Amino acid sequence: MSTFILTESKLDPAKAVYDFTLLAGDGWMHEIKRGQTVRIVDLEGNQAVDTLFYNAHDLTDRYSAQDTIREQGGIYLTTGTKLISSEGNVLATIVADTCGRHDTLGGACAAESNQVRYALDKRFMHSCRDTFMLQISRWGHGATKCDITHNINFFMNVPVTPEGKLSFEDGVSAGGHYVELRAEMDLICLISNCPQLNNPCNAYNPTPVRLLIWN
Amino acid sequence: MFEENLPGGGLWSWRLRRHTTLRLTDVEGGANVSLMAYDAAEPLDRLNLPDTLKAQYTARLTRGHVLMSDMGHALLSITADTCGWHDPLGGHGNAAMTEKKFGEATYQEKRNDWYRNAHDNFLIELGKHGLGKRDLVANVNFFSRLDVDAEGRMKFHAGNSKAGDTVDLRAEMNVLVVLNTCQHPLDPNPQYAPKPVKLTVLQTPAPAPDDFCRNFRGENQRSFILTERLFLGA
Image (tube, rainbow over all chains, first blue to last red; front, side, top):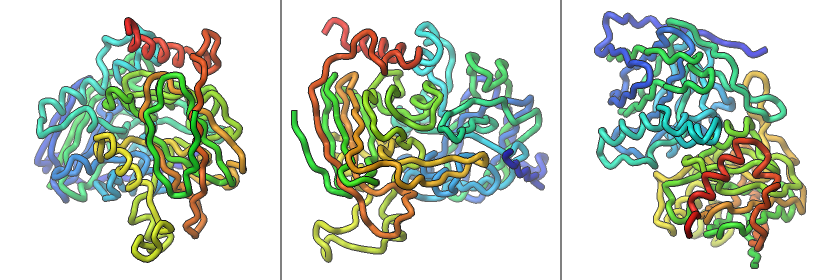
C-alpha cells in the first residue's frame, strides 16, 4: 500500500489577499508573485483542478510534467514536490497538502480527446482545453495553443501498475481538502475547473473550488 | 527507401510521409531514442502523451499502441516491436544535467566527441522546421524502460533493449519526426556513452481494415477515423 503524507497549513483564510470561488467548469488565469502562497480548496470533494504554471516573464519557461516527476523520482505530486519548468527552473513548491496525492500523467480533457476516448459525437461537450484556449486568448501577450502543455490534475488519482498500466482510481480527495503552493518566481497560473462528465474524475458532478492567495 | 546511421548523442528530423514507416534499430543494445512528433502540415497538431496514454490505459508503449496528437489524430502506430517496452514518462535531459552527471567536454576540446544533450538537440532540429521552445512536448524514450512501484517511485530498468532490437513506427498522416540519441536522463551510467541507432525509412502498405494497431482498442479506431477525415477529398 502506498503512504499518504498529509501536511496542514497554518495560514489563516481571513488574512488572504485574494479569495475567489471558481465555479464548476470555469477557467482562471492569474499572476502569483514570487513568495506568495496560493491555496486550491476542493470545496465539495473529488473535483479535478487542471492547472498549468508559467514564468510570468517568459511563457516559454513553463511547467513540465516529465521534468517534475523525473527530478523527484516519483509520479505523484504532494508536499515537498518542486514544480520544474521546461528550462529546468523551480516554478513553485507544494508546501501543504491535505489530500496527499495529485496526478500529472493524465493531462487535460479536450473536445478531440473526448471523441477518441468516448464517441465521435462527444466533441461538443465542455472540456478543460477549451477553457484553457479561452483563458489564454483573453490573456493575450502572444499566448497560443502551443502554450497549453501537460498539466497537473490536483485532487486526481492516476496510479501506474508494475505492468505499466495506467488506471484512473477513485478520487482520494474529499470536501475541504486543499493543496498549497509557494511561488518560487513570478508566475502565471492557468486553471480549468474540470467540466468532464464522461468519467468519474469529478464524481460525475463538477463542483466549485476556492482559490486563496497570501503575501 | 533509405537508411542512416545516427551516432550516440546524434540528432535527426524527417517529414515522414503517410503510410511510410520509420524503423529504429538499437545497434549495440542499451540505446535511447527521444522522440517528438507533429503534423507536418500543421505543427500545432502535435504529439500529446497524456492523451496517448489515457486513451490506451497505458504507461508503457509497445506494438499496437498509437501515438496520438492533441487534436485526436493518429500520428504514428507502433506496428512492430522486438523490445516490448518504451518509456513515455522520463522526458529528456538538458545541458546543466549533462554537465552535472558527466562533466564537461566541449566542442573546442573534443570536436565531435563533445557531450551533447537532448534538450539542445531538440531545439536545433525543431528550429530547422520553424519551431522552438514553445513547441517542445513531452517525449517518448524508445528502447528505455522505467519501472514504477506502489509508492509511485520510478526506477531505470537496465538491459531493456538488446543489440538488434527494432521498433517500427508507421505514419498515419504526414508526420514531422524530431529525435535524438542522447542517454536516458535516468540511465545510471556515470559515463557519457550514448549508443548509435540505425534509422530506416520503409515504404509500407496503408493499414488494412483488420490492422492490429487500428483495432487495438475502440479509442484507436476513432483516432484513425478522425485522421482519415483529414485526407477526404484530396
